[in-house]
Figure 1 (cartoon, helix red, strand yellow):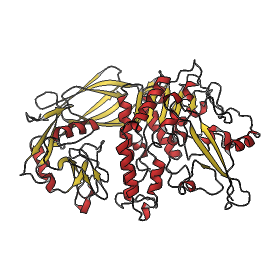
Figure 2 (cartoon, helix red, strand yellow):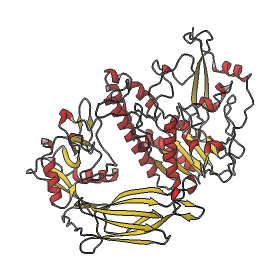
Figure 3 (tube, one colour):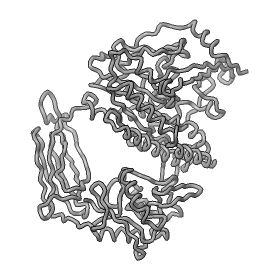
Figure 4 (cartoon, helix red, strand yellow):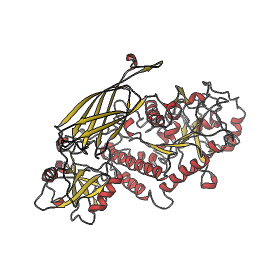
Length: 625
C-alpha cells in the first residue's frame, strides 16, 4: 500500500528529532575571496555523493541535502592560493523556511553555496523580480520488510530564492565572485533525456526532435529563456556590484562514436544523441551571447565542452553519468513521471571527474583575473616581426611556438626540476608587429606561409629579461594582391562568385587558390553573420560552397581547407549526415530545407556532394588582409 503523508505532519514528526548542527572543519579563510555558487544541478553537484547533511538522521529537513548540494561540487573544488573553497564554506543568514536548516560553515567562511538540483531561472531571482521559491519533494520508502514492498512517505518543502544567498550576507561582506550554471531546467533537459529513452533500441526520435526544435525556436521570444537568463545575470550583478559573474556553460552529454554510428548508450540512438548534443551547443552559444551582450568585464562566460570532450556519457572514461536507476530503498527527489520516478536524479550529470573538469575550466578563467587562482607564469612581453621578401611586414602566416618555460623556486629562474614544456600556435592575418606574452624560457618559433604551407622559417629564442624582446624573422614570403571588389571584414577580404563553368567544390577550391586566396573559412558567429548578410541578396542557389570537407573521413569536419582548426560550427540540425555516402563537402544554405532527420534554416551549413546541382558555380573566396 502506498501512503502519502501531508508535508506539514511529516515536518512536525521530524522536528522532534532535530540535532545540533556543527561546523565543518576548514582551513583558515584569511585573504580568501568571497565566492557565491548558485545555479542548478550542474552547480549543486547532483549525483556526486556525499551531499551536505547526508549523514544526519534529520536530513529530510536539511536544505543542503534536499537541494543535493554535494561536498564535491565543482564550485567548492576551485582553489585559491592552494586552499579549496569547500574548506571555507560559510553560512549566510538567509531566512529559510521555519522547518529547514543548512549545514553551518566556519565562522570566517568565504564560500557560500546556494545552488540547488532542479533549479530554474525563476528560483534564482528575487520575488520582486518575478522569482519563485523552488518546490522540493522527497519520496521515501519506509517499508522495513524488504526492498520490494512499497510504503512511501512524501515530504514537501520550498527552498529560498537563491539570490538571498547574496542579499542575506552581512553588510560588511563584499562578494568577489559568483559562479553559476542555469537554464538547463528551463530547457527541460530532464524531459529531453526521457524522450531519448528507447531511441537506442529502435524507437523514433521524432518526439525528441520536435521538442528540441520548439525549445530553440522559442528561446528568444518575449518572456522566453533568453529574457529570463538576462534577468538573472543583471540581478546578480546588481546585488553583488563589486563581483565578477562567472557563467559556466554545459558540456555535450552524449558520447558519439561517429565510425560505429553509436552513442555507446543502449537507451539512446545515434540521431537522438546528435540532436541532444547539437542543442547543447546552440544553447551554450546563446548563453555566451547573452553574457557578452551585458557589455561589462564583470561578467565572463566559461566554455567547458573541451574539458569534457571524449568523456561524455557512454565513453570509456566518462565524466558524465549515464542513465542510472534507483531501488525502492533509495530516496527519490522531485520525481513523479512514471518513467522518471525510477531514474536516479544523478543520471546525465557530471561525476566527480566531471566536477574536476568543470573546476579546472573555471579556475583557468579565474586565473586570468586573479593570480591567486593559478600559478604565476612570470610572463614577459616580446614583439614578433615577420618580414616578406621585400622586407615589409607580412600579413598571412601561422606562428608555432614550442619549447620550455623556466621553473621558479625561491627567486631562481630555470630551476630544472620545475621547468615545463610550452607550446602555442596561432594565425596572423595583419601586417602588424605581434605582441607575445611569453614566460621566461627557451623557445623555437616557426612561421609558416598560409599561402604555401611548405614554406616556413624557424628561429631559436631565449627569453630571460623582463624587458621587451624584439624577435625579427626575415622570409621569402610574397604578399598576395586582393581583388579590388572584395568586401572587407575584420582584416579579411571576401568575394562571392557565380560562375557556371565551375561545377564542383574541388574546382571552386582550386579557383580561389589560383587567386591567392582560399575557399572561405568561418571562425565565429560574427563572421558567419557578416558572410550570410553579404551573400543573401546575391546567391541564386540553395547552397554556396565553403572551405570545409571530410572526404572519406579525412578531417572529421575539424579542419578548414586552409589548415585552420574548426572552432565554430553552424550546421543545421541533423547535419552533417553524409546522405547516400557521398556528401563530403560543406556549404551554406540560403533556403529552408527539412527532411525526416534534418532541418536547415537559411545561413546554416549543410554537407553536399562535390557536384551538387544546387550549388553549381556558387562559392566564396577569402583572402587574409
